Amino acid sequence: MALVYLGIGANLAPEQNISNGLQRLAQDVTLLRLSPCYRSPAIGFDGPDFINLVAEVRTDKSVGELSASLKTLEQEFGRSPDAVKYSSRALDIDILMVDELTGVVDSIELPRADIWRFAFVLRPLLDLLPDGECPLHKQPLTHYLPAVSSQALSVCQGDWLVLPDGLLKAD
Image: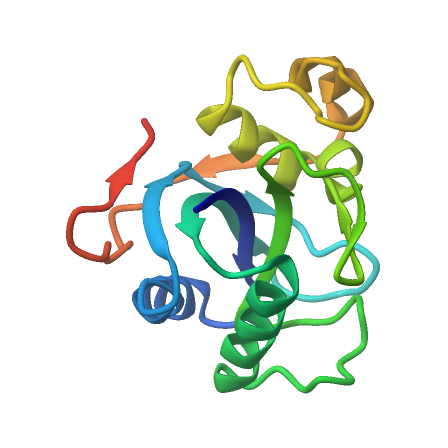
């Protein structure tokens, strides 16, 4: 089974949609751990703030099968397959890393470049992998912090988060 890190976010009823999305996601993968939640402003458009976190999961699905499953889940939460990239959404789930895979796998670029481009991806990933390394660049994940340090990001209380049974949340 592959160890996968997923970026999860929402800015439309995020507390409800992330909680419900995690419950639904647990039907498709084995959820292991969650990072703390972070609030950040919308990027590339005017809209409500996003809440983001990273989930560590295990799955026996291929990268392509997992991607298709995640797209279906997003659509269940109202996301159109042809949605504008920078727009509000009820649920967004992106594959960040899969084991040590690099390059384009089943049309998915691994690791996802958003890891080193956005604080709302890197910071929660570091909460789960404080000593982690980028499989592509062979750099510690902390190496990318200076590039995103000016981006607005704040930890938000996750007491609203309803966790699937047995799931651990990072402190």
